[in-house]
Length: 315
Image (cartoon, rainbow, N blue to C red; front, side, top):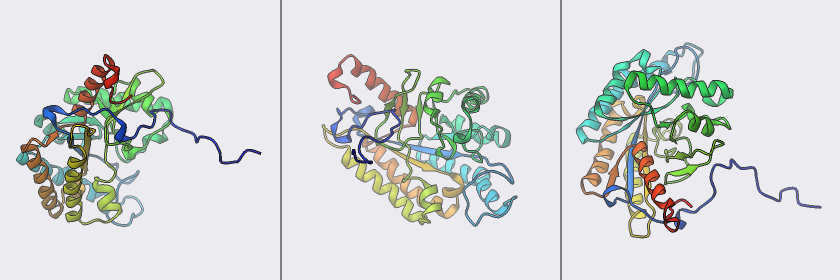
């Protein structure tokens, strides 16, 4: 009798396995081996209902403590972070809930004025996308994209689901509603194409679940100075990994939430970390980009490789 546990496990079918050490090398603009981007999460939460990160024990609705702590990010923390980004000359990708257009449209406008990329991030982070039926999920993706285009003049190319919550159909629906890339999958250090049911390619751009203030500072209760050192160590190690003519190009995202890192004592440590990032940019060692920039470059490399199959970086 055959063993009960033999044979392959169920799979998503979106991409095949290929080790990072078995890929054809290419470079980012200006010959850089490492691309770095800031994923700046701007979120709004329903009062008295739904989900949300907590600084203290959750209370029965209306949980004023945790709601107001998160709201600090939109009122104060985000503006302090934008001042820091401006001071260092760093671009960012603003991952926005469309509920911000009703609540604090001037915050989104400030990101647009800076020239930041806008990335779709649901209507509110009080809701899980993966709980929706397929019709409702399609409507969410389409409505967020349409509103961002109408309000900010940008139809987002990228998407990050609230709480990284997906259904089995999310990649298909993203491609079918006009998105080119997703930040939901954290399985690699390179942008990689994903299969969808329509035959369209949806790119997965690396989004960090380690270099991310929510799991590190809130869930694991890491101190801000230690999180800042994580940024420095990640950058230095990935620069070494991406050096040399045979090295694969890498992507380093830094996920930030202004109600966390916008707190003054944490911002002080974040400043030190981002100064280190900016210094490596000044030396030409890294490419400071947005996830959309990363996706476009990878698409161009892939298109070039299509006419030269021996050079295909993702085959």
